[in-house]
Image (cartoon, rainbow, N blue to C red):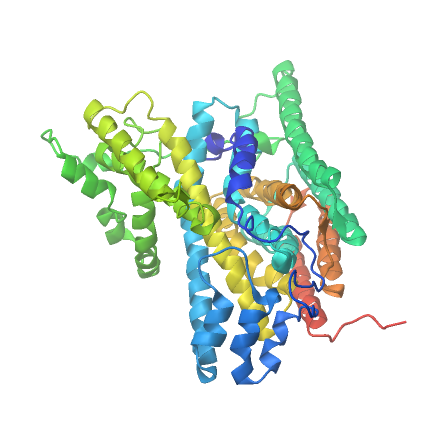
Length: 584
């Protein structure tokens, strides 16, 4: 598993930049920096300061709807639904708890959409792209795999940085996820399976992450992000990728030059985590052979399409638990929609997942999804020459291409250019993730207005938890299967990508649109508590792990969990004003 994935990350950097320039919402908004301080409207004779949207709950019930509709601080540039207007204009005040319940339920379902899209459609297409481009395992591991694992975090950060009202969400989510992963996830791994950590990868990753946190701390202190600063974040990540490649090359060169080691190699005794390999062929007996018919049977085109669009494996359904079945029921609509709109290329299959009728349908539907999710559908409804909408042209062109492909190919043999479907699937799934992330950010901001919470505390709690829960379950599964070193290494390697690319690329795109520096004014003491907690957690691991001679025990894991609980208590007390700085 890890051996096949651990090489996925370089070509994505180019693809990611090309994609994000077009996908991050907010291009329709005013050309201003991401300033979180009060602003002034651009028009009107009597210009009055914009009132914080969170003050809406202090108004009379009859005035709330007008306040939401007229106050610029309550408006968002991206997304399909106006959640603030919905909760204050379309729900009676007595039904506010019902509205909040519906919003939270929709938020949880959006997190489910993010997880399913990233795991079953985005990451497999990244794997196919890396195989097509013949990338080495290390380059792919620190580019494609990192982006695949951190896609929800990256897209959420890009969306949040694109709007001045939600920039605090990005900082809270990136720092909050960092604290969560380096304490709860790392501690949970050591509790599930104590192990001997790899020294060199541990020092490399934690030092790079501490540098990234220190740079962000300085950025917050200065209150602005300039173009060289944003490029410096991305440059530091490129340097990290180069360092990983060089370290692995040096290690392999040392192993080739050594004739001493004769012991059998297992994932737990390798001296470098990059050499951990979990063969995808282990215990790879194909149980599907038992269910194959004795006589050869040729499926019709309609049967191929029906089977390809079926997200439910009936044999697996009978074996799974009731909890798995309940979760699968919630996933079925999402999986069906994604199967219909996102092509997936699997290089490990003989037919490379070629489904002729479905893939031809993808040539029509996937480009339509792209134009309808790009800038929340703004480009899709744009009329060319004032006559024909863009989406109509896309449908006509896609239908023509699908017709040619259908009559020029067969059901049994994938075409020579089938690998291009991986790029189409990558782009379509990325835009699905971006659309879901936009709605997540807008809902969180709406909940913050209702409960009068800062964007930072929402980012470090709900957004960080939602985006990190998938990585947590993956790492815990690896630990239970006997590969805690691999899971522990992923804790630090993935979040380096998230903070460097999330902040660097998010600020770079905002600077390119507004042509001004990104101005940041932290939400008081809370951001400093968050940054300080992340720095302390890294220092604690940097000191305690070598003191344990890299033998991580359950005690170390429980200490990390206790650290996170204390951090969460301090953060919430700071948010509600119990802990505050005395004015001089």
